[in-house]
Figure 1: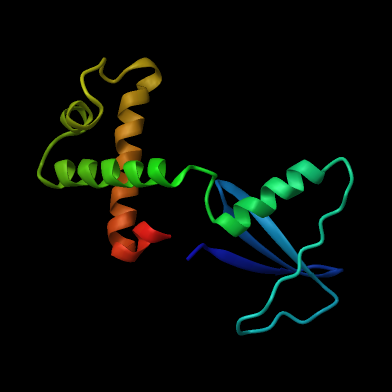
Figure 2: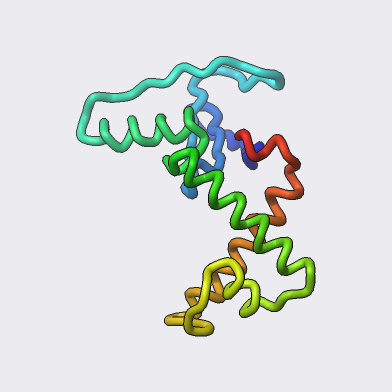
Length: 136
């Protein structure tokens, strides 16, 4: 479940949440925010921001960055493999070679080192959320 935060404003209440690596905001104008489930109605203005608004709406409804399902599943699998190697005692460099293949260490701007760290963190987060997270 994404982290959400309600904020009161002068025109109403705003719901801020992470969406596709960006912060998204839903405005609840002129209404009291309900404590339980509610329906959302989206207002998309046909102005110069239309393409941006539609793309943001697609991300909200899809719940991802637009990464295709097979790519997402492959990334999740690789993340879990990286976590397994790390939990078995492999260092970052060894994990990178096992998962990403041979390459310079740490690589330009420590790219490989950062990439393997992100994979391990992603695998840990996936493991924490449980098996059902694979289907979300």
